[in-house]
Image (cartoon, rainbow, N blue to C red; front, side, top):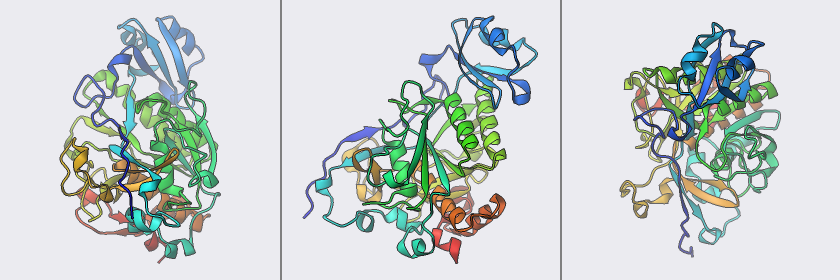
Length: 420
């Protein structure tokens, strides 16, 4: 008999941290800016140009010609724009994980089974993550999945065998094999968990690129550096279960858009396929006008909406026919859920996976995206010499039509269909 579940609720950002409704800036970091140079390269004198105008260089991304700086002078942006080599400059942008909240589960409350896959992982089964698929292909370490996130707990028994390496983009949190938030570990488990839980592709290799520390907020500059680093490392697929909404009508925010776009295009030129979550604001992204969802709207990026266990659009999921490419289960709170009242949640409708030191239930587009990443990794493993364009055709064919494109894109991903 199951014991009562022990609850330890952790909240992720449900609203965008900004001075405006949609923005992408942190008001506590209003003196942090990004400078975009022309020709996607840094001029030889960029350091003196920035410091001469009162800026302090925080980091430079030489591959895409951007610099993150701090300046006390509110007029710094206008001063640096006078340099003919500068294309744009503005406030630094920020992103957050696309997960709502989770509930950690005491092992004693779980059934005494050889694995948790059979009883708890309805979502992995729904996308064709099953023994029949894995008998054909379960992935291998020749295919490297880069997880740009909060880090991955490399000691967790359900992911450790598939953890290849990690790199942190945060000097104050140098270990990418550590996860102080839990988000990245859950995402990695959805892709390549192989223990008490199973991921969609339990044999794939995971590379962790840490961009979050103690808070579920990081800068677009750090994420852009991670994208460039992963591309240079030769990863095959990048999973970004994170995002930001940026108001392009605000001149100070356009540089955020350009920096993120440059990083994405750089990776794509290197042959990297990028998968991202659509976000949890319940927005129709076709109708947000000047408000842009990053990185989901960028060309070539695969953007994923979230579904429930009845193949409906999850109440929190962003959508839009021009944005969504695929959908996958992200879970739900159950039929009796009252917003902000976790006592009304039925966690059996949510997704079950790993967090540092244990297991948890969660919902969000963050856990929908890695299912698409996992299926794509399976296809890549089975057809290792296939060019990306053909891999993407295979991915397109591995779908079920469950409804309108505006909600579900090309359809619900299903690994089994990739090998029919």
